[in-house]
Structures are given as structure tokens and as C-alpha cells.
Image 1 (cartoon, rainbow, N blue to C red):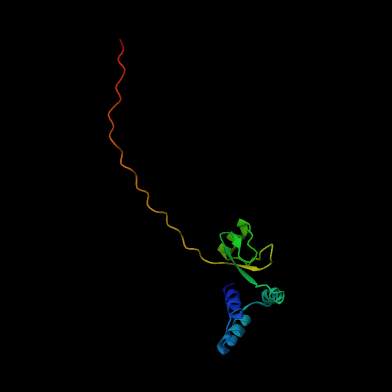
Image 2 (image 1 turned 60 degrees about the vertical axis):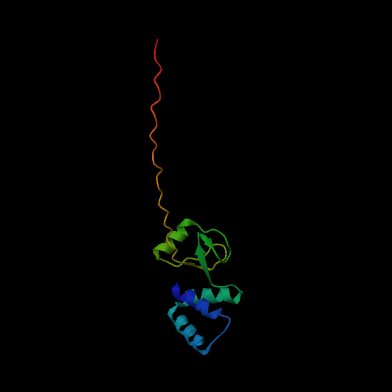
Length: 119
């Protein structure tokens, strides 16, 4: 998946340099033919072939994907496509947010409540 994402980055760059064409050829050689053909078909239709997945949302069509797709991508078992737009989904490592330390308020000593006297 990393190769596919790099390929898209180089192919959609604004400036094409001679060295870039060599990198694109090398990346295309590393990607299996069925995956590359699906990627090229999306490109022929004017779509990017890879979309980032962030917060369970496809960056291509901006729709939420099922949690099972996110979990499959986290395990790295298989490539997954968005059910809506057909783009390959690329899951970036998200930084782990650290919760701020919670400081407990000090307990104030209170005077005991007076007990009602019985007459």
C-alpha cells in the first residue's frame, strides 16, 4: 500500500522531473498487476486511486467506512477499497493522544454537623 500511495504522490506532482519518471517506473514494477490496473482505471476516470482514511472517513468521498474496514487496515492483512468511491484506502499512523493528568482537588476538612438533641 505504501508503494501505491507513493506512486500517486509522484504522478500527481505539479512539477515532473527526469528523476521522477524513473521512480514512477520502479514503483509500478513493485505493485501487482491487478491492483495497478484498478488504480489506472480510476485515474482514467479522473479520480485519484488512493484515499487517506482518517477518523474512519474516506478522504476521497468524505463518507464514513465501517469499523471492520479500519480494523482490517490496522492489521495490515489486506488492501481495502472504499465501498462508495472505489479508491484504495490508506491508513496513516495517527499519533496517540495523551490525556492530560487529572489533579484531584484537596478535600477540605469540614466541621461535623451538630446532632439534634432529643428532649
